[in-house]
Image 1: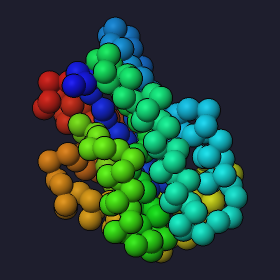
Image 2 (image 1 turned 120 degrees about the vertical axis):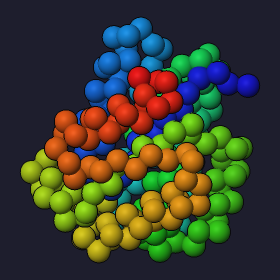
Image 3 (image 1 turned 180 degrees about the vertical axis):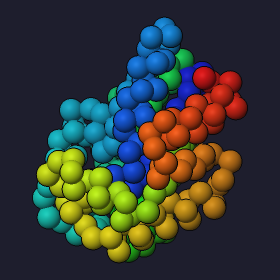
Image 4 (image 1 turned 30 degrees about the vertical axis):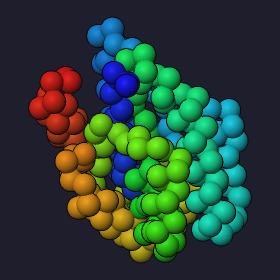
Length: 205
């Protein structure tokens, strides 16, 4: 049985989650914790190659979904499970909730095969805590426009991200104990305070 902790960061593109992941990683490393920082799709050479395809090559929703889960399987076997087995703190920028939100709700892909793939690929593995950075898509779009050249997902319109946001809410409603919703519309200091409070409640800060 693993003794580590698996924490995932989720939210629509432009929610600002990655900057707070950066800060948590920095703080915990300075405190001497064994921290593994990773991301999805990605985290291994194979998964990073699949990420490039998913983000930049046109494809249908089924192909996209299968590539994401293939990347996740390699990521779990190669990085996440070994790290948890040795007692590390695994901080992951997106995980399966993103697949249900983006491919499921956003692309309109049937949720039944997503649940089947989740069971096959993860063999019961779920994060111990998922922080969902929630913000109106219009606000997120403004942030993205000033950040970088958009990929296939970041180029989608506000309606797409409204669906994605709803997809996250559906996942939260199904198993609320695993999630903490962060109001990402607040200034950075306010968002950071929420993250700290959630972790402190679990004795992790």
